[in-house]
Image (cartoon, rainbow, N blue to C red; front, side):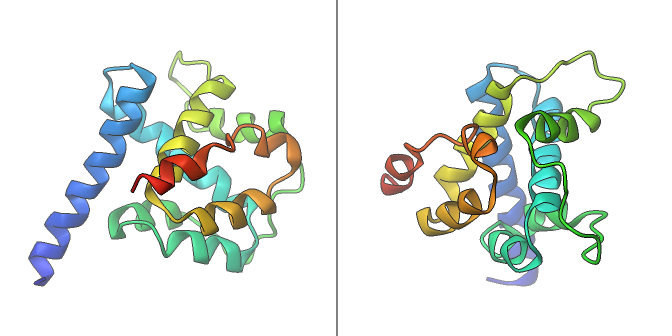
Length: 149
């Protein structure tokens, strides 16, 4: 694949992720779905150890990998407040100025999309890195979605 074809392909893959999330949420607002995906990526990235964040990002399409790493400070320690409420608050932080009040349902939808796109082994590793109450947002039946790929 040439450089230009690779760029076109990663844009297509990114649209697939966003469209799938938008459809799952029933929002009919792809810009908002993109913002949610980006916000969850950033929260997840800030909660993972450096090596786990890199392993996770390696499975993302190139454009989404760039979004994952956007404004990242790898020298900063992973988030210390690691509760479900803190995770939701971190995601909500990126929706300032938007009347949307996020619920666990929206976060779960993002995790479901991620689970359908990356390997079950990586999902297991990322989930294991999260506190139990945050893992509750990432439903276990992800293996079935991944097996269908």
